[in-house]
Length: 251
Ligand code: 13P
Image (cartoon, rainbow, N blue to C red; front, side, top):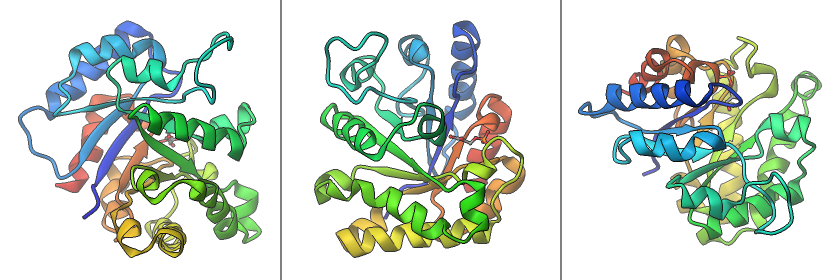
């Protein structure tokens, strides 16, 4: 069966010392306790190597927040999937709505990033989600389905390695969470699209995470839904206590 996963996305927060301390605190709080989910932190690229040095990989997975669409070469300031993998990280968020919105990332770029992540042994956490206008005008199911379908050029073998994260843009950092029923409906829609393309087995094995103002107080209800396999956590991942509180929602 598919995995339950709680992943933190630190975004552009914490300087190095703070980030290393936060990672060590999360690792220590998890160590020795068996939880019913995998736990991952996706951290700024500058923090990957030192954070890798303070966490225990059996306890806590490590990921980046983005990677370049290019393999290598004259792309000043970019960070390749191979570079990320060489730090010891094993996950990479791709297509976060903030990257789509503020950096204009397109489906074609996101496919290139996903392929490079996979080629370098990284597990992509591929984000999809509608904006408020699309929620209000009723097009949200089609919008998100087409974002997921962008990945349908992948082989079954490759798609089976992808984690999908549904993050309604109107719920990110706003304190306005999707209701558990809204999340469930969308996750079922996403899983249905995967089933149509790749069949029952891959659809059933794909972890689909919810993100958007997820916190200890609402995680249990969200995660109780059959198609919600965990969370991608922003603000609440920046404090060890609240992040662990969300992990414990699976206990
Ligand atoms: P918040 O949990 O801060 O709403 O952010 C969600 C998110 O964007 C995670 O990727």
